[in-house]
Image (cartoon, rainbow, N blue to C red; front, side, top):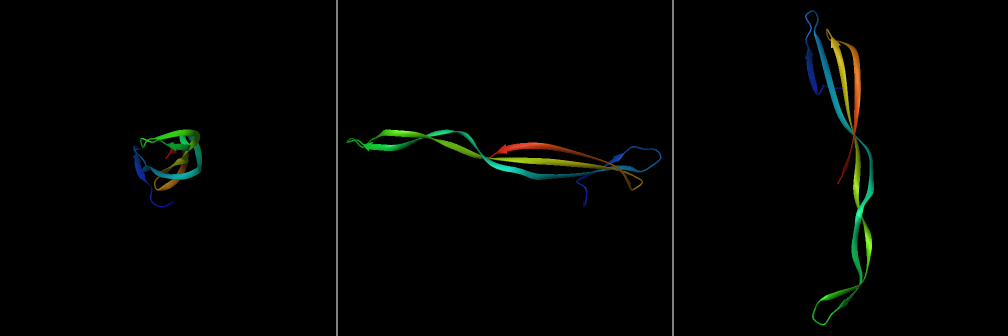
Amino acid sequence: MGAPSEITPVESPSVKAEVWIYRRTTLGTARQVQVGFKTVAVDTEALPDGRTRVMHSRDEPIFQEELEMFDETVRLLLFNDTYTEQTRSFQRRVTRR
């Protein structure tokens, strides 16, 4: 697993105890999600004064990428430099960009 992200000593009068903490983030799914609409001119007409008049328009969807991420934390308990116990936790995050 390599070097831990963090090592936390545990108070103990008789033994050396530490918690080794490993963290990593992995990508889950990536997908396009609709977040709204925008109105787009389909047919326009040029007016004599230089302005443009919209004759017809339509709504088009607006999409953003949605990323699912997982933050994993593994904690290893060591007594006298010997592995004794492990806990693992996951946290899911969803972000848009």
